[in-house]
Every structure is written in structure tokens, then in C-alpha cells.
Length: 388
Image (cartoon, rainbow, N blue to C red; front, side):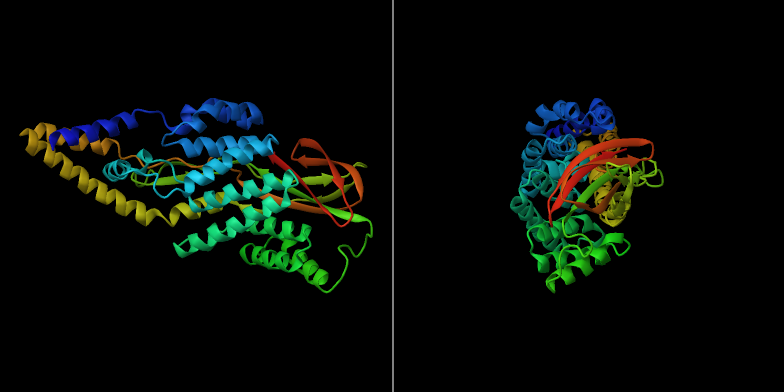
């Protein structure tokens, strides 16, 4: 008994000696913030392939860096691995579970939160879309639908559903001229995010299309450009100073702003509107789980006391028993890991343009970015952009 307790304590203390994920990967996060996305992704390649409790985190951060770099095929490969590993119900071993009760979940393999799971498929769908593989993108959208259905049966809240997932699905259905399916998902978006500017317009447009109207009432030779704009960084977890058993999300500041879109003649066309406030989603998600975290931590405290008593009895040393309990308690910092490269805000801009090649100017605060886009009659073309 004493030997097993000592082994468990050693495992926990050895784990606790490791730097936390964000500190240990400081170079990656520095490159990511500097928008040197491909260089950042390369730093994680080795760890993303290696088994370990942070493997999924390495894959998620590497996958998102590749996506932002425009390396969509590579992003699909690594994010698919993260999705598959996240789906594996048996990857948490019994020893990991026991250790997490005695200490915290930070000693278990990282599991994405519900909204993070959905966003894996969102970025997969966007990656396929940017490669022109719309059928594959729709497969990801159907996976999102199945995932949300399963998660809601397990208690997922409405705010975790991620309206941008349904909006992407709706746009893809619209591209495939499946207007009834598009209408359903546009209406779903409107229900989840009633303040999103384009939702009501999209619902109205799909109803017109189902009645036989053209894509555009004003331009017979036009298509649409959709800009998916991501701004800022999602909050990060730190220890809650009011209860050190709990994690708390802290915002990283900054106004996400919005994107202004100008055409090649420097004429203002439209702006982006927020469809997803990820800062709010993350904070609500964690708040909804606090009672479960506290319950587990109280169980862990009782277990620590029991282990200390067992060590004292087995070794006939009260000093060793107290020391074991104190050492275990010192490892009780909450799990502070999260998918921290996600944006703070996801936004959408839609504009109608004549068929042909165009160069857009995208303005975010003092930054200007040029993007070329090819527009097809009655088609939809996509542009993605990330700013901080």
C-alpha cells in the first residue's frame, strides 16, 4: 500500500514539475501573434505526432496555424487527427483517472470542451471549402450536426452550438443550390444569433429562391463574395483567485473591431458583422461546469486526506502521512489548458460583385490587406482573414 501511494505521489509530482503548455510553447505563440503561421506550425510538428497528455493541443494549435497560413490540405490532415483522437472514448487510462481525482484533470490527456470540438469541424469545413471541395465540406457540416445532437443529449447548452457552424453549412448548401437545406440552417443561425445582420436577409433570400426568384434582383451577372474574418484571441485560463480549486477565463483585451471592404476602385462596399463571440462562449462554458469541477475537487481533497492517512499507517509515521497529504494538495492547481489560438471574434461580410476577377482591400483599424477573388455568376467565392 505504502509503495503504491509513493508511486502515485511521484507520478503526480513529476507531472507537476513540467512547465504549463503556454509557457513551454512561448516561441510558437510569439510566431503565431506575428502572423508567421507556417513557421509556428513547424515548431509543433514533432510533438503533434507524439503521444502525451498535450498531444491534442499540439494538433489543434498546429492545425489552426496551418489554416491561417493557407495550407488547407495540411490543416485538414492534422485537424482530422485531433478530431479522431478527441472522439476516442477509451484514451483516458484508469491510472490517469485516479491521478486526476487525487490531484486535477491537468494530469489527464487534454479533452477539448464542447465548443472546441465543434470548432474542429468548422475549420475542417472551411478548409475543404477553400480547396473547392464542397462535398467534403458538407460532410463536415453533417458531422457537426451529429456532434451537436450527441452533445445536446449529454447536456450541452444552446450557447455552445456555434452559430457560425450552421452559417457555413447554409452557405455550402446554397452553393449546391440546395435551397431548402440552406434555409433550415440560415434559420437556425438566426435563432442562435438573432443580432447577426445577415441572418434575416439570408432567410428572406432563400425563401425567394424557393419561389423561383433569381439570386440577385439587381444584377444579372453577379455572384457573391463571403469573407470569414477572425479577430483577436480567445481568453486563457488562469487560477481563480476567489477559489483556487477553479480555473477562470481571462480576456486578453483589445477591441475585435470589424473589417471594412473596398473594391479595386477604393470604393467602400460593406463591413463585417460578428456572428460568434468566442470570448463569451468560453466564459459561459466554463461557468456551466464549475459545480462539477468543485465536486470533483472536494472528492480529491477527501482522497488526499485518505492517502495521507494510509501512508502514515503503512509507514507508522505521522510525519510521512502529513507530508504525503501536503505534497498531494500542492498539486491541486486546476487544469488551465485550452485551445488558446482560437479567435476572440468570428465575423462575416457578404457582398455582391460582377462576374470576373477583383482585388479587394480589407481594412482592420490601421491595417490594410489585399485579396484577389474570382467571382462567378450566381456563385459564392470565399475569402478568409485573421487579424489580432
